[in-house]
Image (cartoon, rainbow, N blue to C red):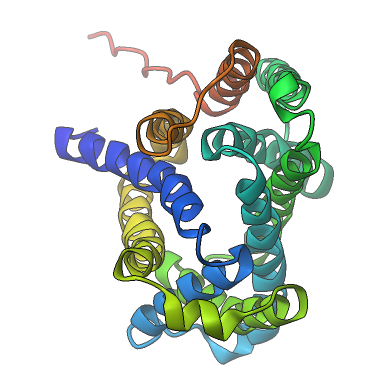
Amino acid sequence: MKPIDILLAILVAVIWGMGFIVAKAAMSHFSPILLMALRFTLTAFCLIWFFRPPPGLFKQLFWISLVSAALQYSLTFNGVRGIDASTAALLVQLEVPFGLLLAWLVLGDRISLKQGLGMVIAFTGAVLIIGAPKLSGDLVYALMVIAGAFTWAVGQIMIKKLGNLGGFRLISGIALFATPQLYVASFLLESDQFLQIETASLNTWSAVVYLGLVMTALGYAIWYRLLGHYSVNQVMPFLLLLPVTSVFGGIFFLGETLTPLVALGGCLAIIGVAMITIQRFRLPARRTA
């Protein structure tokens, strides 16, 4: 990879990793589902003018948005509200083994021995994290984050079956349908939405801007540019920096602490994900004269 593209790949991981920190801070004012609704409102408003999804796929995009955005983000960020952002970022890494498992069950993809071992190690790390005394009273929130990771993986299988729609058109379509779905969920499950909006400070709105424009629009813009130039196996390993960013961000910006057991579980989860995503490249054999 070119040096500039390596820096861009690292930037994506940092942007997405800091998203957990920014969202955690913003949830001191906004309720989780309302925050995600505002996030996707901004994303949809900025992208829909330039990248319009085809009307013929509206039905599929509605269900994909419901699963991979509305349901997934509602679960994940309600979980983040109750536990440290750094811990949640480590648990979210289960998206990768869940996705691999579902791809095997639904799409018939093969799982190598190394990937299978990576799945076992990642899930072992998750067990250590949720078994830590630190989470003894907040287990339901940790399970919500794990459920969100599983739901995300289901959504990716649905997207895979959709075919090659194009990154920006896909994000635009998901944001378009997820926005009203999240507002409905917020008004059914949360309260005082108008009061939250009226009393939000400039710093709180800046968090919404970060989540909607920087984390979602800019982050995915860079991500899909990289995927257009390199293979998934080349760029995916850079996302291992995402939980590392969230852990350090939680410690330095939110004053969170990382217990030895959670740290060990997090390391195992990251190692397992690395075993799944990092593939060995074989150089072509040299020609002989």
